[in-house]
Image (cartoon, rainbow, N blue to C red):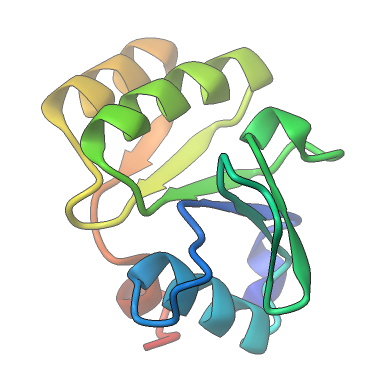
Length: 123
């Protein structure tokens, strides 16, 4: 695990419900020292951190976006990442779709469809 591997990670689908994976991933990335911002269309605050309503609202472009949302939302996130120049999207299990993966490939965005937390040794 190397939190310094990324300058900024955006987690899309952060929830204030502690039982949801969007909350658990955000919490554990924060606790592990990763530079992370949370995204939820409702905004608000979770774990003392401001949530952004979109990836575009974050002041600095993230170098990694992690999706923890419905596949149809991930497809929209791929479009937003393309416009922003984000080069890597990590689609958590259940958030990926064939369309999202294909569209990301067309745009030249690297896509990983596995659990970030397990692969990076956070969990």
